[in-house]
Every structure is written in structure tokens, then in C-alpha cells.
Image: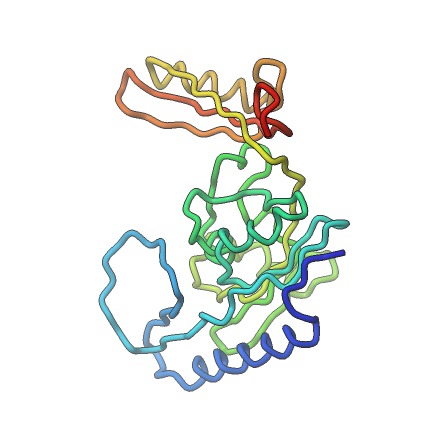
Length: 244
């Protein structure tokens, strides 16, 4: 079985209604003025002047439509946070291929902003797990892009990552998932220089092994020029000592 918060019929009705609202807002907004998204959370660490011009209310686009445990895929609204996405996939022993550190980052934001996190050395950045997107363009059109050879919107699919909204907004995405385990065993490795840390990071990334165990997550922290750490994470079935 797959995770489906609502029936296919009901979520399609809600999704279409949300599409109609946001397209109306865009096509009836003042011309030649900036577009700003209205959503529940933001992870942009910068000051931004308040404005009422071209405000697109995308707060409705935050559902997980479906998790397919057979094909290891999920269909998700673009403004769905990773916190909600992971909560939907974990009951099936699955997780997104790249999970950002900030739980309120949205899937659409991570794709258009080119996020990179501790599993990226294995799985790349969030956009590399995307199979298909519905993109709202500046003309109010909704384009479905998949990147397949016969896809007429292949160029948009591959140029969308790191575009920061300049090419449109992803309102629905279909992504790959990967199997996970209940726990992650963490090891902190200290280094006295950036050069030593860099060598170790290259070796761990290339081998994906540490102490005869697979490396699933790799992250770095710098406290000073002589105190730096690599954090190695390995997914495990049970806690050391047999605890669960």
C-alpha cells in the first residue's frame, strides 16, 4: 500500500483549485513589479522590504500526495516542508535522497535553490532526485517537465535548479526515495588543519566506508584553524548494546 492522505479524487480537486487561485493572482497582478511568495515559513537569511505587489499565496501547496513504497517515490506539493515529507516517508522505511538541515526548508525551495547536505556525497543535491515537476511560469502557464528524451520541456527541467524563481515556481514534484533504518550511528573525527580534514573527506567520500561500515552521511564543522571535525553517520538497525 502507499501513503495517501486523501483519495486521489479529493487531492486532485484541491490541487486544481489551488492552481486556479495562484494563476489568477499572477495574471491579475500589476505588471513589471517583483513577485513575492506568501508561505508559512522562510529560510532566507536576509532583510527584505515589505511589499504588497504581486504576492502569490502558495500556502495551499504543502501536501504529500502519495508515497509509493514499491517504486520508492513520492508526489509532493512544492511548498511541503522536509519535516512533513520525512514524517510521511519514514513509516515506510524511506527517506528523501537529500534532507536539508533546516526542517522548514521546502522541497521546491531546495530544488530551485540547489541545496546540499550530508548525503550529497552519495546522492547529489535535491534536484537530482526529481523525476517530474509542475512549474508555474511567469505567463501563468503550468508546465509539466520530466527531462525525458521526448519531453518538449527538457531544457526547462534541467535549467530549473539554482534558478531561484527566475524561471518559475515548482508547485508539484515527483521524487525518488531511498530505504533508511531506525537509527544513525555518529562518529566525530577531529583534525588540526583544513588540509588534513580535506584529505580525510576525500578518502571517506571515495570509499564510502569507515571502520568497515558504510558511510551514509558526511558533514564538516570548523571551530578554529586548529579545531575542525568531520561527522560520519551510518544508518543502523539497532543501538549499540542491543538497545532499541
